[in-house]
Length: 335
Image (cartoon, rainbow, N blue to C red; front, side, top):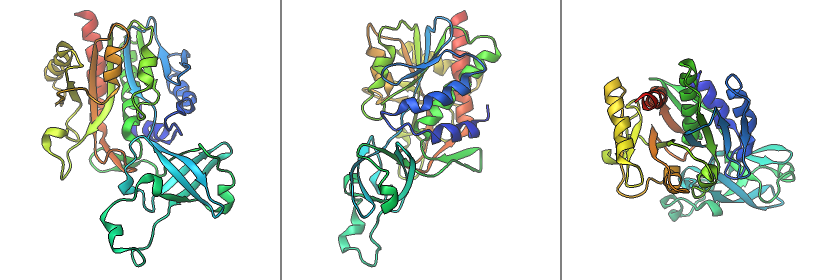
């Protein structure tokens, strides 16, 4: 797999929460070398099932964004947040408005500093007070309820890094695809389910529906977490290039978390431990307690600038996370 090219494809999908089925054609294409059993359930979760699918690899497929709440005749759009949009990065940013007649491009309106009030530079304007400027003609295509997502495209940085909007959680989806590729190369892809879940960003909503009535022996959730950067305490983040962060939390079986940490140490895979005293804030919270409960592990890829258009990840972390997942499944089966 070319990780950068796959990130480009997944990051571009217009899958703002509630519109995850837009990703189905791409996942069918990406998984076509291995199976044609790729489908979306009634909630919008996308699944690929191999054999009895008793081991679940999960990453959420939805993206944060905005939703159009009003269209002004002058060509401006009023919006509301869908998920945790960072209002600080909106001024003069570029955006894609996803209409029924194709995409409309626009920018967030901003007041020039020469004309702004003295207090304007002291705080970010809330998302629902931000206007998007798409122009009069383009605004005629926009309907209330249309989704909006960041513009921009992935770029390669030095030191094996990628900067892109929507690495959360495009990079998690790439990771489980790469893990599946590694399992296929070793003839061990049987009895795996890949699940790209819906509406994680709006309240972890799709994960419970995804596993309802299922009987998975084990679940590995792959998401992103905070990477080291100025102003972020070391205990709250991982390191770019430091490998996956292995989750430890009361909602995650300690035995399962220790299994992946011990395996990473044995294989010499760089890694860190992400310790949470309560829930994890990821789909692992929902999946672990669904039905009669599922034995769940959480592996997170560190990224910088989360929920902005310029998230940064290290390709080596994706490769190492996928390797740890694949080797963990192989060894768990043969233990």
